[in-house]
Length: 198
Image 1 (spheres, rainbow, N blue to C red):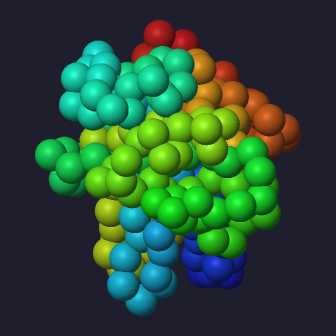
Image 2 (cartoon, helix red, strand yellow):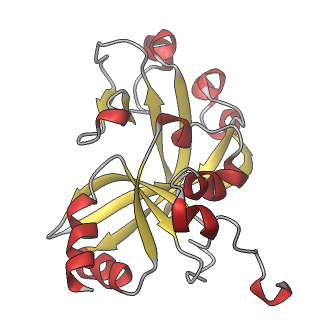
């Protein structure tokens, strides 16, 4: 068990997914798919929940950025921490790195996905983006807290794909990510919302 936990800790890095297992009942994270955006094994891990769209349009809080937002063009609840702050992720199609954009490090599949400086002028980046999403708040764990949750079997640590970040169907992302893993995890994707109805 300790070996498996160490292996999971070793693969946690920016650009990976923390996918909630069916045992996770915390309403903040039940059936959530979290993209890791920063990880220091001795300090903390930060991420954003990719599958919690709100009903708030991007234009209501960031009018200049509204036209860049992917569908659904709403703000997503990135997690329970710092709900009064926003961060954004964008995908770039080319090879350049425009001012105001910083790549997520560590995972080649997401090499062109990065964080956006929302204090910059949106018009300077508008033609650069192939995908854009805004998150209110974030998810955060202290080093020991995440280790403990991994040991309890609360999270699967899985590879991310750019489509996960900018999916047009966030409500089905949990099932989609698990299904593409094949084997036992594909079976977990069929786990009912309410197991008592089984």
